[in-house]
Length: 125
Image 1 (cartoon, rainbow, N blue to C red):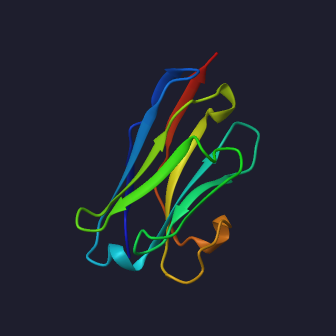
Image 2: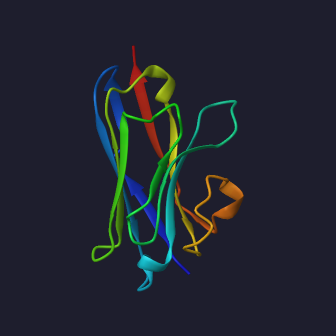
């Protein structure tokens, strides 16, 4: 089992940047595919980015491609989401999630077994 704690959210102006961090407990962090999802008020939770167990393979939602990057440090049990050129439509609660396989490499939230509590990101226009 793994516990996830997000940090780094906040209020930023459009065009600005934020870095979200997700700290994971447990000794087998490198055995989890890690993902970031977000949920805006009145909308369904949507995929943002995910990174493979080794960190070699990443994938992004079209809406954030070229603006967001995802990385992980398996020695420190952390995964980062760097968000640049933020837009008001990026406003949402952002969740870190862990998939206990290295092979699914999915953007479907149903494929993820563990979730953090979320961190609010608000982008003002």
